[in-house]
Image (cartoon, rainbow, N blue to C red):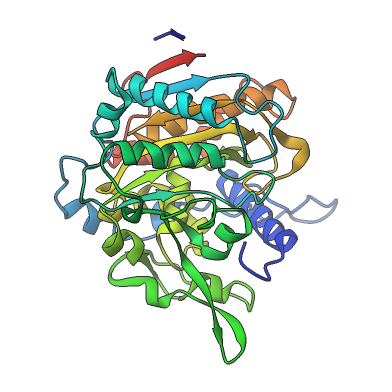
Length: 404
């Protein structure tokens, strides 16, 4: 080894259409694009002023006023990202699977490269201690084509066990609990490990209904001055309307620490990695967050339930998508056979974005000079850095590569 320095009954097509349409409107607003065409002999209307997300009032000052803790983001290793590559990791394996022994070794090498520990057990002990309840936040949005690799998750569970955390104190969670079951994150595959979601389905009067209000902590919320009404499809999935997005009790009451395991995916010209994997699962009423998406991604993560409990990020890049994300489109999925390990979600997102962008250029989807403008349009990483959540451009990122 060389070290170089969906809900039940959800219509996916509808979900994807709404997301893409919303993203297009956001991008248009950000650029000041006008759909008015100049007609001969007519007066052209003045294009609308670009929407300024900073014109929206939020309660971010509430989060910033709460004292930080020693483990607050960006964690023990700000600006450090360890990357591990093994080209054979997924060879001959079905989607969402890898060679178990290879995934275990890759994770061990990654956490050692991040921490400098000679023994991975010593590295795990830096992030979890006996008596703590540890959550593993996954991303099953890509379904059976592109969700978290089971063998990597099992290696994370084993790593926590090596630090003295029993399976009864480990919880795998996401926003939708039925997505867990649909994609194999079950008690059969993860015996003894808790499995839960912010939104859960239960039988009421003989019918399955979607619930979530009982898993909201009404004492802490992210607020911004924008309200929207949700249709019959989206209303139960957002739980509440109004200006407040309440944090889930999974974070505020059930867990002491969180390990964030996003899947390597694009989301249009940006990415859905560490910050997005946390921010859009941590709260209710989050779909309206696309109105101020760059702020939402950063500011939600600045609140204590995320800022003070997220201790480790592991980007699952054994498979990934460079287009069509955050859902899964088969023709855009490839096998990078990599993972990235970091306490700093901002630095990890920057490195992951660089990697996906290179693939988009290689495939002719983007031009080599586009990245700087993309990051200006989608400036959530700069905002997160300004909120003290990690390193983006304030200093060089220490990117450590282990090639197996």
